[in-house]
Image 1 (spheres, helix red, strand yellow):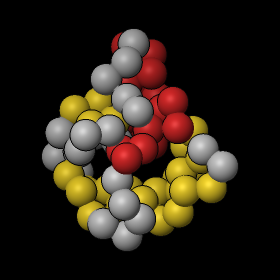
Image 2 (cartoon, rainbow, N blue to C red; image 1 turned 90 degrees about the vertical axis):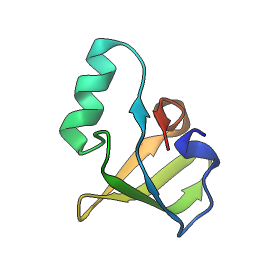
Image 3 (cartoon, rainbow, N blue to C red; image 1 turned 120 degrees about the horizontal axis):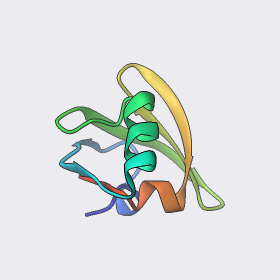
Length: 69
């Protein structure tokens, strides 16, 4: 299931990061790697604020659709 469909406050493990190589590398630098835990803090207007590797990151819904949990 894509990260954009996860309920707020529910911890999930990242199973796969999709998209082009450039997109995957960008998300990896933000901490979105397979096997790490991610929690959606809030979803406002199509954007998500997520906790990943002890930091908060804001990403758009299109990026969140590429992260499978």
